[in-house]
Image 1 (cartoon, rainbow, N blue to C red):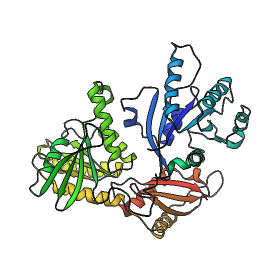
Image 2: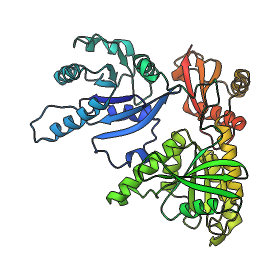
Image 3: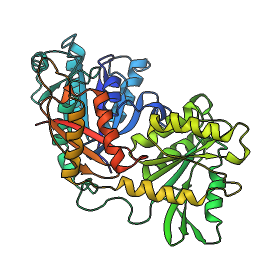
Image 4: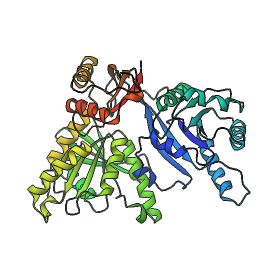
Length: 440
């Protein structure tokens, strides 16, 4: 089990902003996840290969038993009880208030390990935390600005240091071996309803050269289909179609959505099925982003290509120019019903699965880093030159890198994306790449 970390604090101290920052603002699918109350939001996060579950909560406040505040407090304490560690957030602009002392007392009674955070601090981070020590806090206090991304690295380092024993055994992806499922990739087929996911599964399992059998999955209603194609073994997981938020009303839809997200979490590879006649929608984009943010190798399958009502070559050219640069994922045009281009699906799975396990030598990584720095110098940050010293790969599936620098906050997001693109040229498209900048 991954460690569970709950974010708590009084209303409007920036808990949700911090939550978004820690999960890199990948909220579209997470926010739509049924089965949790509106007062608790769950998502997966990681720091340098250390993975954990993050819970956002409503504001803790005093109130009578029937008040909204009391209900929010009740839901927050469900999260606190579930958590292995609590991140308690204060407002650095307002300074300490009596409600902060009340919350500190509640957490002490709960007996949880706590990391205290002073948010909304854009300048003089160290000075901002001094006032809150007057509340009797003996632990280290981390000052940051969730909105501007300042001090986030310090918080994550503190979380990992505090939770270190719980992360033991969670480093199986740290480079020593290859990581991932040994020679048998698990593939989740995802997409909106009626995109042709089940048809594809049946087609993949129906080749004359295929031997398939069904085995129960890890959940009570998930069936994993093991397929052997030309001597290569795969485990395919069919999923229910995810509907838009407003349409996810019925209990069955809610249950199916949870299982879809679970299938993505358990997969090595995610194939997004898209109905070619309906086109690539915002929901498709959100689902693809979620799989990508979960660290899965991904590809898009445009199904029903044979029944396309528009010019096929023109649409293929459009997606080549728009989809690939936007999401950095490959796509195939297929017909699951007629079996057109189906063998290419296996080839693409093999490619992106292998790419996700790519381990670059440290010398290769630093050659790429040197080329990037030579072509594009980093601008100064607060009057100081930003230097990138060296980089190393720390994990696979997905490939993750740490770059050591003198100014982590001085590396602009656009520069990070440029470096990711250069690494992706070597590793391959369809593979999410994680980069963390750490102070040397």
